[in-house]
Amino acid sequence: LVIDAMKNCEQTKGLSVLDHGISVKNYLFDLINHLRNGDTLKYEWVLPDWLYTNKDLILSSLPDDSTLDLYTTYHDIGKPFCLTIDSDGKRHFPNHAEVSYTIFKQIFNNDVAAELIRHDMDIHLLKSDGVDDFCKNPFSLTLLLTGLAEVHSNAQIFGGLDSTSFKIKNKSINQRSKQILNKIKNNK
Image 1 (spheres, helix red, strand yellow):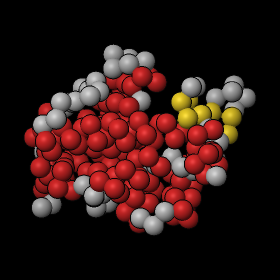
Image 2 (cartoon, helix red, strand yellow; image 1 turned 90 degrees about the horizontal axis):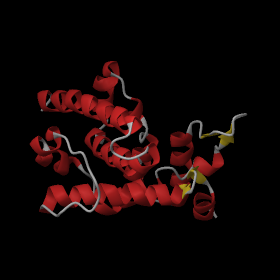
Image 3 (cartoon, helix red, strand yellow; image 1 turned 120 degrees about the vertical axis):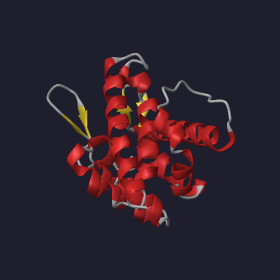
Image 4 (tube, one colour; image 1 turned 45 degrees about the vertical axis):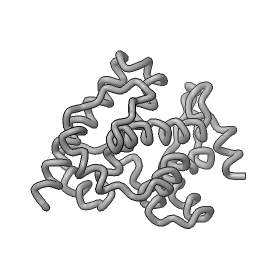
């Protein structure tokens, strides 16, 4: 029933919530397999230097692949249940991370994936003054890597890798990543 709701709820025009989750999963594993094994990337990326410089630290912080699969595929599982449409016809999903966490916990038995879902938006909303608190989350590097994958997965929605929207979102992730990695390395 919930999976059907994800299939039938548009994330954006022509893309269901479930298809979005699958796309993010595919991008994340494309990136992970590239970093782990040197696999050729299947998708278009604009990869930052910090990713390669901190590859071992990032990879060692990731939970197991089945947890990452569950997390990314179902990270927006609650969106069909909190969808609102404003007077201009624009779709909004207020508090969707918490709604997704609650629904995921009712269906799946994976506490790590549930916590990742609960904090999925943190990297996208992170401001400079919130980096210290963000780094207290043991999954901060997983959230960072997934955020990078999601921004790239969504690039087609934004208008491609050359779009202003993609560039703004990618720049934000890259700025925060440097602060996050410095904080984590200084605390080791």
